[in-house]
Image (tube, rainbow, N blue to C red):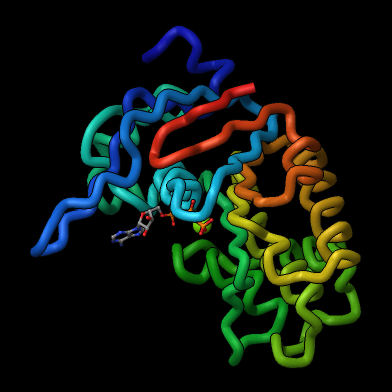
Length: 229
Ligand SMILES: Nc1ncnc2c1ncn2[C@@H]1O[C@H](COP(=O)(O)OP(=O)(O)OP(=O)(O)O)[C@@H](O)[C@H]1O
Ligand SMILES: [Mg+2]
């Protein structure tokens, strides 16, 4: 257990991610050192291909690191077995993607409940309904994704990311597929929910105005942090 683990919810020490194909090894993250304070928001910026999504997925426990250490409240994520890692993810991490990733054959409410269904937690329609209300979709509970606008679909995805009351919310370009008005609404909502749920937000974005609304901005270039402010 590390001294600062109470304050820092996430700590990365010299994290490398390398992906091997049969031809070559690609080094994507090349030694990331990062500490994220609990209840804070950090934005991750940088050019396309810099490694932003890879960093986000590493923290989410969806990408395995090839070298270094990663801690969640002092828990060594890099040492976890696959089932323990799945448990870490489902209990502690909510993820919002650029492309919403809703299941087309499920209603809004069923999509919100899906993470619990997958991890075998009892489905609580009341909680799912409350979350959909909190993202302004009280009247859309039984709508299917194709019956919803892009902004509404992303709000369903935001509600879904919160169903397990995760301590960490990871949003990878959550407004990338939305127009200006919907982007602003979705970001307002993400920041509000982060504050209401006292969670920690890791936000990948290309939008400087959005990045500046976070407590801290880190800039990645070619697999390394080049600015941490
Ligand atoms: N599975 C993979 N195999 C090989 N290379 C990969 C793989 N996934 C990502 N990469 C490479 O790793 C680098 C970083 O990718 P990543 O998706 O993290 O970038 P990014 O900063 O999120 O970019 P963008 O802004 O375009 O989303 C890129 O050069 C990409 O081509
Ligand atoms: Mg990306």
